[in-house]
Length: 143
Length: 132
Image (cartoon, rainbow over all chains, first blue to last red; front, side):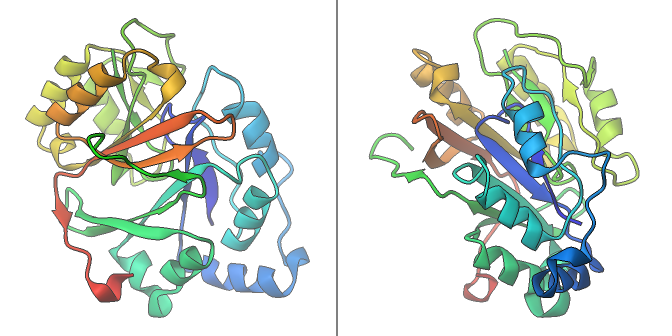
């Protein structure tokens, strides 16, 4: 299931989301209907704990939250200090096309945009999405 | 100095370039001392484990990446909050550009500081209308 994670040591500025599995579509849809259908694990970090324990300290260790439905993850992000951060995620070819492009549709709904496509080392296509709620215009001469 | 890190859950597809400073920074708990060990972690049964190389000279690191058959094909991101590179912006912009990175987004973070988001995409392919 998806979770939020640090994105390298730019962790204070940017974060990433994974992990889009075929079977988690049903969990995501079930959560939309009934939020109590998902029970958070007690021993791992929530989105808020991830922010407080991993992102906020200046040491910037790598870390992640627990797995949860994308719907809950994005709700928790929007209810936390992570709301304004730049977030990236990557779908591989199979994840992108599953169930009539279910995951791209869900990402678009939460404000993600497809910014680039790339072939990975084994020749498969990766789709790179980004959500940048506090975008600043790139000025002439900066690019 | 710089180091190459796994990038969240996108380990197999996207890496992250970090710690662009003129001086050595702290040792990382997930640090490995060779690119080979770093690649071993990347290739570990498809699991997304966290790892970082040790800090090394930026030009040396990028030369090693360029010479490596696997790493040279991967997307690498470099997101620099301005307070980390204060006074060194032009220096790092030039270095990143020379290494094939392009500035693709800028963002304000919650403290009002600007983040410069660079990407190096060696195997870029076109986005078609139906992809969006």
